[in-house]
Length: 388
Image (cartoon, rainbow, N blue to C red; front, side):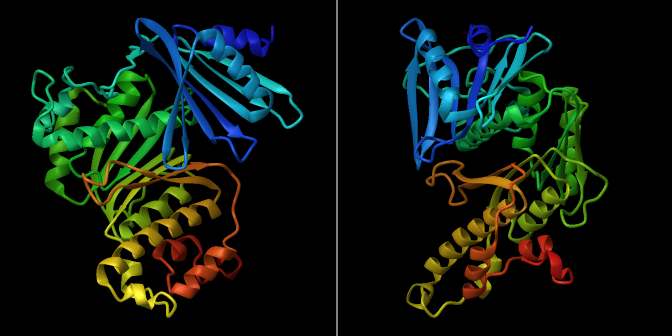
């Protein structure tokens, strides 16, 4: 029998809830997405709704009864989609423009419910301190007792922050088949191991992750560690991003701190594979800095440090817009605090299927002499019909 929305919510909003995400906002003045998870506050289980407005993250706590009412109201007019993850079943609600509700529930292998976080001033991490994680110990982030080394605390925060970004997009990853993820420029692979551990060990997804890097010794060490942990679907290969072949379809592409044009080649590969999700933290945006010119902006561009920073920001803005032109919904998010690293912006792109016009972008890039390698890769000059 088809469930009603009220019946669906009554079943899903329980002690088995891991995460619920409201999305598809129908009004410009409300957040585009609301993430809901259980928290413990003064001995009571409440449900915390988190949303981002501008640069601010807003939190509001609900009792179960209040949350049920809020979600019913939200799906009646404000939002068109709800994705729910539970310890024994996942579910979704889609609401058409005419108000028709499509409700689906998909049971899966029972996994232990996530520990409900205490709602206090201490930051709660996906990989909590005090619980040793083998790869974090071997990579020098944790002691064998699970204590984070002082010198590695920034790396520890970065890993957890990245996992939070992945947690946000989990409803976009299928549980019905193997998920393929490619990490371009994986380096020592802190985040590659973290992705595998989080998705496969903690969340139960069937993932196949490939880490790619130019350094043979790094690849050899990472491969040895993966084998020692029994991570049979985590592989490392030596190779160049631009020339990487061998895969027809990839679900998620990660490229963190790939230098300069390497980011462009990785993003172009992701688009070619029709990846559902892209995570990119660009680095060393030299290309635009070497050729940007504008008589209007010359009073500012004559200062080298300002030219460098403006070029980096504009470069990432152009990349985000080019991804939108290929049917992605993009966000530029703060990865970790500026005090930890100047390379602190992350481009998150999720496949939407809605291609955006590049007319305004083209006018800007022409005015700044700012055509990037990514634009040339996505819209080759010899294909006039596909040119931007």
